[in-house]
Length: 308
DNA sequence: ACCAGTCAAGGAAGC
DNA sequence: GCTTCCTTGACTGGT
Image (tube, rainbow, N blue to C red; front, side, top):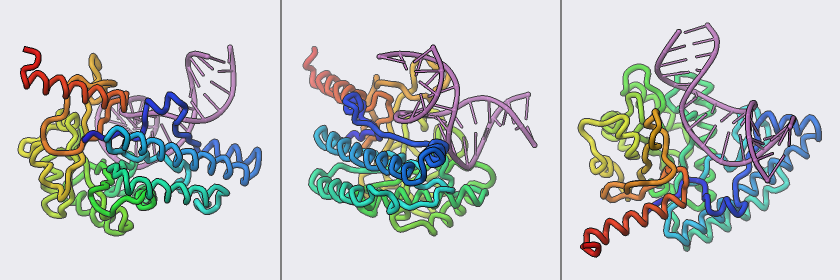
């Protein structure tokens, strides 16, 4: 099964898209129009983003895809200097209703949901303030997954990079796990680690320092693995780290680009045949997934000799 | 209607 | 010890 990452290019063309607000902008609004006005603008955007998420999940259901929930649904909410809670906006009750609606609908649809907090969340950081921000952010994302009706298991994984390379790998992993143990159940039950496209965290090391000692499943990413290869563990081995169907990442390098890590718009190939769900990190999003399905169909037809 | 610059984050690399 | 890059899409303000 393929999975859509955060944005539907198809629905976006109809104006169904996320909104955001920067911290700087929030403070501008607060100074010019008062805090109630600023909070109201923010609440409108939070509510919009949740309704957009509802549409995207329904879209994925209709196409037979999974969906990666955006990590930017509630801009500013987890900013360290923001002193309000989600309950403080007038849209709070409606936000709760939308969460329940989605959870109820998806109980029938069964769209596999996941999330991927961004690269600035570093559980093993030696900078205490960065660790505190990370815990706050991960707990928030876990809460969003809870509210969307996700199971507290690797069926609805929260994928994270280690993003920390200095020193002994096992020390980093131990620090990572120590901090993880202080996070909410919604984080601990879902967190998986991803292969990185540079630095020490390839498949082999994640296996040795996260899977072996701690049983943490590993997210295979074909492009990262290509840029930062493992000697021992291939995609099939990595799939064995999961107690349920693995969720992997698929992308291709942007053609004619110096940086091999940049993601292409559209596919020219398909994921390998290891049994997994594949999140498609190609820039044209749902158009790219449809192209993958086409490529797959052509390959199958060729195998059956229909074009001979 | 369109475009260029802005914003947000932590880590790592290069000077 | 500083600067720059990495990443990304939406937003903002100017034309």
